[in-house]
Length: 638
Image (tube, rainbow, N blue to C red; front, side, top):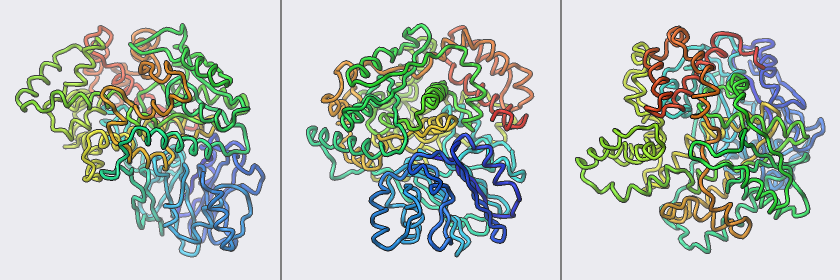
């Protein structure tokens, strides 16, 4: 797990070194670079040593003839099998790293090699024979890849901030990202806050020649099947158990200590249970967070008692990290490392856990991320199931139901849930799938934007990225699978995986996600939807599969709230900070939001007329992001 960067185009002495400095936190153990001024190519790599800690593992790694060079961020879990195949074909290896197999596999199979890989990665291969860069991002988007391509200059990096080291990269803001962040609390790929910088989408690859993108294509898509479904509960349980075991076993490979997140939820608990099954005599170090006072919050459930119960049941060491409202002191640092505004406190939890793990000598953590996205575990999946009880109503009746639901106040949690369930009842079924991801409807979003921002947006609406993804799966008719497809294409990589990567790598920690192993994801695509969302029971088949390993009260515990009591803190501990960051003076100076509408939103939220906590936090995040990346040198925070 590392940081990569580089470019093809006009050669600029010292540029790749400046880029490497900005992502040095991703690879604190070693670094290396390649410069080929004649072909106008430079590659940089900062190394976090996990497999083969010797100097021989330093990147860029070259083939025997030194015509092909590789820089890679990530892990290739099936590298041993690939290594043996390549050695049998006569390839000579200079290290025992997993990354080196990519060099020799490219020699054998070219860009078709991508179909052979099981892992998490973003990599660039420089083929000096063709003077081409071959770039790819892993299937589910666990590892990030940013790039910019203008006027014959292609530049890329693991983090957006490194791309800004090139002075010719424009800092013009993309208003689509502003609207998307207000709508979703994050911005779907490929959009970033800068018009000139894009995110390579998960499962995509591209070839660059002469500083221009020559070819870009999707090499992988989420495999949901309409036929050959697994409908037998017993068969599905056995397959989920065996696939999860194999996934965790693959991802335990390391020449350094491996720990795990343990929130006390099903997903992280299942990962730790498999770790113990594979290594029963070991006591892996696990980490959890708790909030000051240990109380329930925002209608949710305190995770800590469940994490303690799982740790005792499995016999693992649990490190508890207490989160105080003074996390405000970490907000600027968090947003700097995120590269993008994200309206969530969960990144800070990840950051503090990884900081503690690194202090204790842990360099790899296993995470339960992805379980809700492949097995169906979010509240919106249950809400989708409930549609069967009213979606058959005539359009006129559904419109009346929607109007009634939207009259309910959002300050009270039960009313908030009813509005979420029925507040868009009149929309067609495809639009309803997308709107479940919205935190603000498009009409309310528009009221928060200035006329200038609205003018530059034109006719754009945030349904567009969701609509585009749904057109890629015309043969998948089941609504749940269509929604899970959207989860894995948008919310998972652009929100959960983005902050998990950025916050962990800020402290030189590699986070692996066994639930997103491609074999397990393929299996979930074959499992009948009713075994994933069984009436109001989400992750039904996963829960049944884990009954043999975990306490019943852990598996069937109430759904936890979004990490962090943001609604409470915004009205109390963070109130002054919000009023400062979103003051009329600052909002008017920025020019993105209507300052009167913003102040009214804050006042209505504080008086409990509406629930706008996360929308307010989205604007706070964007303003802090702008102060870091636009107003002053972003290097000040590194």
